[in-house]
Length: 212
Ligand SMILES: N[C@@H](CCC(=O)N[C@@H](CS)C(=O)NCC(=O)O)C(=O)O
Image 1 (cartoon, rainbow, N blue to C red):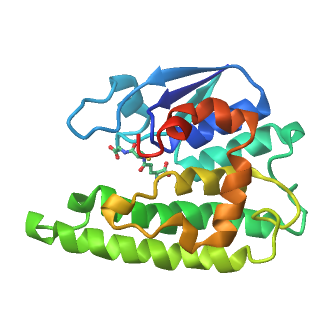
Image 2: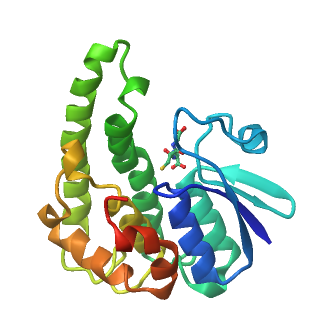
Image 3: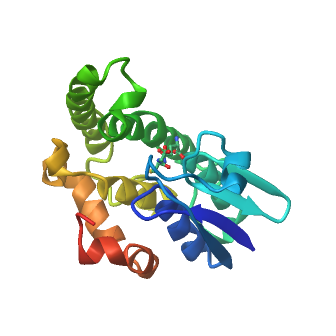
């Protein structure tokens, strides 16, 4: 039985989709991504940064979304969500998950949490503007990488497609982000991923109201 510290709109939703795809029992522990709200001490004990996702299992716990995705896919190979260790697409799978985490997500962070990147409140708008441009740059890298592919890794669906979909749900025009339409290859995959029963279940609030 897994436990997942969970908040809507957050990266914990992507991990929940993976758990649904794998088909294992799990329990959601509600928490918040609101900077004005306290985090449960049990969450902070595992992740002092205070962010989600945080995953617990019988004898362990971890944070960092990309690492959790790799961990779960390796632990449940029968779900076929990741290429095996010697598969030719394994390197691209690892590269893409880490790039999503450290480059695309980081660009989102500049726009959502600009105070973490600048000294003075007066500089926050500039950080947000740069974050939006960085989003365009990093999504363009992914757009070009997946050109001609059915899925992120070519002809095989994987956790990277779920991760890609999750990241697209964070794009907000009101924040100056680029539109998903600017990246047709990304959009094509996201439009198919959203049809999966696992995604329909987890993302119901977003599907009903994309600016939720
Ligand atoms: N590098 C972390 C970042 C996670 C992250 O930014 N989570 C956001 C929601 S998507 C969060 O919990 N924000 C609240 C906070 O940072 O306090 C990961 O990929 O797991």
